[in-house]
Each structure stands twice: as C-alpha cells, then as structure tokens.
Image (tube, rainbow, N blue to C red; front, side, top):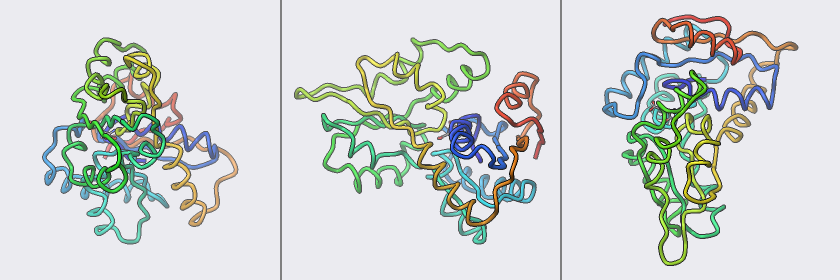
Length: 257
Ligand code: DGL
C-alpha cells in the first residue's frame, strides 16, 4: 500500500477487515507529504523512482497506490516502468456517486492537485455529464486528517471551512452525495458528516479498492495462515508518535527508504 502519508490507512484497514491474514506493507512518502501542491511532472518522476525502491525493498505481489493524487498523476507511468507488477490505483469515485445521487448534484472533494488533473475532468465527462458536479480542491483537509489520527483531536470549524464550497443549493436541488476523492478523508468521515450543513451520502472507495487488490493477490500467492506484523516504509525517520500510531495500525516494523 502506498500513499503520500497516512491516508492509505483507510484502505489498509478495509483490506484487513476483508481478509485479516493478508500480508501488508505500508509505505508513506512522509518527506514528500502533502502531494496537493506538487508540480505534475516533478511528482511523476519522483513517484516512478520512489515506487521502484519500495518494490525492491518490500517485494510485493500487488502494489496498491492508495492515493488519488499519485494515481491520477503517475499510474500510467508506473505501469510502463514496472510492466511485471500489478498496480491497483485509486481515482475519485465519480461513477458510483453519479449513480447514487437523487438530487442530481454531487460534490467531489480532493486535493488541489487531483482537481487540476485532466484525468479527473475526464472521469466527470465520462460518468457524470448528466449531473451537476461541484469539484473542490481542499487545501488543508489531508493535514487535518493526519492531525486527527496522530492527536485524536481535530478542529470541526476548520473542516467545515474546507468542505463548504461543495455544498450548493440551486433550483430546489442540493448536494446530496460527496465523493471522498483523497484517501485521507475517510479517516475523518464522521467529522466531515458532522461539519456538513445538511446530511449527505459519503462515497468512500476503499471497499472497492480492497476487493480489487485482494482478487489480484489471491491469484499470485496463497494467503498466509496467520496475520503477520506489517512492515511500514517511510521516506524519513518517524517520530515516536508516528511509530506508535503505525504499531497500533499493525505496522510494528519500520524502515526508512
Ligand atoms: N491521500 C492522498 C490522496 O488520496 C493525498 C494527500 C496529499 O498528499 O495531499 O490524494
């Protein structure tokens, strides 16, 4: 599992819930986080090199890019660079949201970088051209999710300010479905729901990503009988609080690449 930071834990938790015996390694580019403001070309080059080092180190059967920003920027380049490795990407769940909405208005919350990508616009054109889509790049929401995970606390007013632009009400229809287009956001799903001005359905893609990854893993390797402690690979030395969090999440062994 790879993410810029701790957001991929939302997918790791789902994989563990669906198949507890899966051997998981969790990689986070803690030195590069957040990806929201990176230049596209720089990020692509950086990711191809970094994922190569991580594959060497963890020797996985499947790589899950549990990061929308990295997936929309670099998935094609990663597949081209490592053709023997199966990759599962994460892209904003616009298709299920377009199917689920009753009002016809969906909100898409993602990082500024994901929002800027042509890939995201193409998803909207393909799956939601018959819907009103309010796309918003949230500057600080991924950081707020990390803060919640690490400290147990988060400022509800800050979350409300980050998500406010996706809530629109026009011609009697208002946003009723919200795509969590960054893997950090399901980690504060409850807080997002509480900060919303009215009830909305949150679309979290983790169950679908987990199923896809497990299907591929099952075809390449037999699952171990007992859960093993997972390996966490980071791009800079973690502090004690991050180490403790990773251990609680089942990643007791930590390495730096
Ligand atoms: N978790 C990442 C995503 O799904 C990005 C968070 C960030 O690096 O800003 O897009």
